[in-house]
Amino acid sequence: MGRRVTVVLITWNSASYLRRCLDGIARQTHPDIEFINVDNASADHSAERVREAFPHCHQIINSANCGFAAAANQAIRIASGDFVAFCNPDAFLTPEYLSRIVAAFDQAGEKFGAATGKLMRARGADIEPTDAIDSMGIRMTRSGRHLDIQLSVVGSQFSEVFGVSGAAAVYRKSCIIDVTINNEYFDEDFFAYREDADVAWRARLFGWRAMVVPEAIAYHVRTVTPERRRSLPPEINMHSVKNRFLLRLKNEGAYLAVRNAPFELTRDLMVITAALTIEHSSLPALKWLWRNRRRILEKRREVQKRRRVSDRQLAEWFR
Image 1: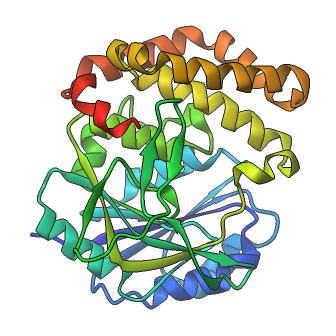
Image 2 (image 1 turned 90 degrees about the vertical axis):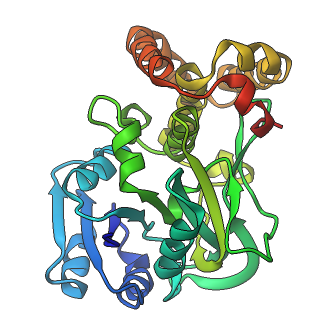
């Protein structure tokens, strides 16, 4: 059985982080790695730095920033690995990260389609390690939020979680093929932000499971956090609000919508009120959702038609 891992690095003006990130990829102990870089029209020579470090890598240079989701799909379409791993430019993988995750996939069984290691917080361009946990998977709340799990899991080779953070995610290729819709694994309407939660939810609906592998360690510089929201560029906040609603409109069935309604509607009211009063940069998100309502409905129909798991079976994950 093949065990090739395709490592995908998507860059967009990421040069300041690349020395440490590329060093982590180069030092992986897993014996069979394919490396793909997709550059989203960087102006800081990111693509050149990647090529210097990996002269024989597959490289796609886009003429404009098409977003994380579209760039990731470009890489997936040419990936030859049995697993596809995504590493953010601001992440650093310890040498045994991929080998330990592949071993966990072997132990866990074929229905586990996604995995992450223990992501620790890091600081600065050199991705300096800290003792704080960044993510050990994604959890869902009844208010429609998806949050990073920041409690340590010890004592086992893997533990099941709802989904995995895209910062250092590894996906089984057969899972990617199964949950792809209209030739898109990552929904390109998300552009960037929350696309990992969308994939996690859709994979759950299709019967796939996800896990965290605590002994696989990576470090991640977390630049987008709720407490920094007001200091973020307007386009980030716009996509974040848009994708909050898009995530549910596509994936949530009637049972969960009714069960979670009091919590979701309260949170929705807070988000919409903020957009109307203090965060006007998020108003285009609401307009986008209205203009594209038919396309969203078509995507919802396709997801719900192909789902294999009921909302009642998923309810335990929404807490």
